[in-house]
Image 1 (cartoon, rainbow, N blue to C red):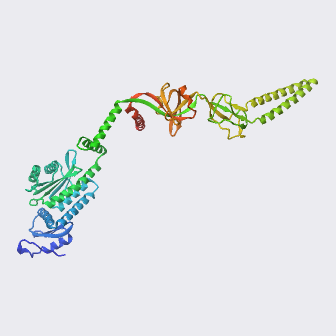
Image 2: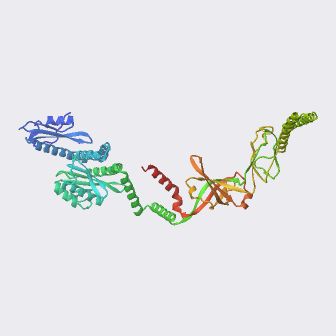
Image 3: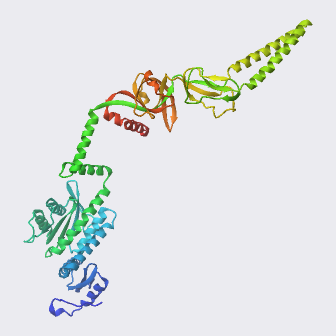
Length: 553
């Protein structure tokens, strides 16, 4: 790869040997210094455009100290940056826009490669300073009501309280306050803006050009970017446009980094401030209407009282519920009635088979006659001992006959009073065996009912005997039946992972005509009048108290 000189100074020195170091810089793509002590130095630095080397600047300078040599190399680097800007200016406008966008994306990608805002800002500042030929690039982040310097190009550590950084922050705040990109010194045709802080910064730092660009996100300030060039290198329109495009993309990215680094209290405070600004600021009519409605609802809940009622599932039961059991072991002969039938007192419900009983009675009766003959024979023979034995056997058989006769009278199962059969259906068990004491039917009266409530253990403490309420049954949702709490059973039952207490209530006698045992529904017992806010938040408040007690050491 060879270089083709397009300019040299002085003219007579065109052929001097700086071509070799220029070609090396072109091949290696980096700055080079050659020379020995007390001899002339040859230095070269490549000129890049969009990452590609487009040329080389080579110089031969007199011998000097190392610090002065580094300063010369730095000035050569800045000059190469100026040449890059000049090349961009002479390029095709469409190509220039494409290259500008490409450079912006490269700068943004360098910002995104770092995990933290500090590292990302430091890399970006160094990259922008190198690409745009800047002496210093500073990135500041807006915090509350102040601007904090996040990164300074080519400086890992810096004193934020130094006079120079204070002047740079003042210049960036000046741009933020005006929401304008400020270039100093100003062009005569530029839009007039206030540049007092920029003038002081230029006087303090000796910069030949200062560019301050605010970083915005959704109209809110998130930071600012300050660029400085050496004397004689002011910012031209392409550089200003590139900095503006870069700032428009940096704003959301800086905001995202800041949000990620915030603690939970900071997030809450920021969200609250944002909500308040939207609420009291212009526009957002829907939000304001919703907030007003929520405020009115809150006032309504806090100021208005309502009836505090306890809801519970309920079941209707007969006040007297009698069980009819099998009087002896036998078989079902007939069952004309079953559960759900309304019966009258004395009406036949079922009949048991009595054939075995009658056969047994016949056997016992013949045995009793046989003992009678034996007794008479013993008396005729005057055999007192035999007479006593036979007399005892006769009494035993007589008792068995009496038992059989009693059981025969119980073969018919009749209703003890007017009512409804709550349970029992023997119509499908004719001829089936039954055991003594087995429940055959359950009967309840038609004019005396009670309501059994299953009240959650969290609410049972508010119930007392004598409180009034209403019952709504699933089969008759349009009807309400008044009731009065009569008894609270101090025994709980577990169901579905929760504990419930049995509470009994009495209905009015006039409401018993349409009711039947076993009906289910929902009952509500009125306790007293309380604030609606207390009623609606009681369950949550109790849960919080319980959890707080559980978690407290």
